[in-house]
Length: 170
Image 1 (cartoon, one colour):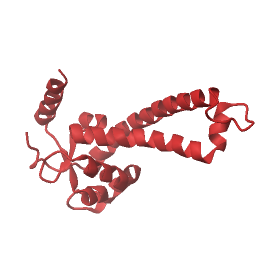
Image 2 (spheres, rainbow, N blue to C red; image 1 turned 180 degrees about the vertical axis):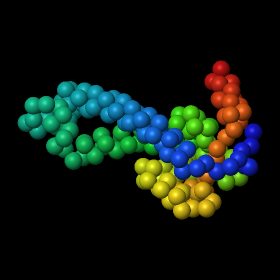
Image 3 (spheres, one colour; image 1 turned 135 degrees about the vertical axis):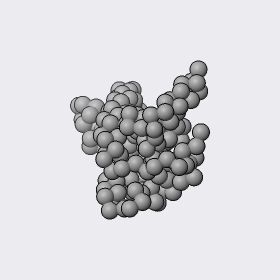
Image 4 (cartoon, rainbow, N blue to C red; image 1 turned 90 degrees about the vertical axis):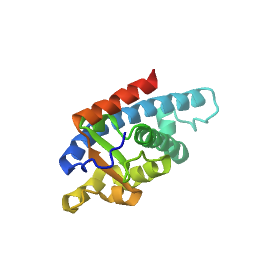
């Protein structure tokens, strides 16, 4: 199934999908934070990480530059992983599915991990989409830098993608 000739998505559709994806990313960030904090608390509780005279585990995390950097990096890596996994698997995040959008290489194929990672890093949390407002080709800065594009699917194309995804899971 090729989407090479699908029209590029507008700023407003991308913004709507971004809102959905922001909420999903926030949930993933919080889940990762919970799991990482539980692991950190376990390490502190068993004495593998020194409390440094602090009473609460959260204080130990907050006062250690190394551990807090690892903690926040882990949370961010979980969110980046969500986008890379979604884009390399189907070209769609949850928000993109709802708004019938797909990110792909310019030839219509799925992006690889490296392209997806570059796209996440170049996107600056979605702010790079603002460049769509003055781009006649409907390519945002991170689209150009990663060799990707976001296209708008028809209802039928979106349904086909969802059916293909469902068959892949069974």
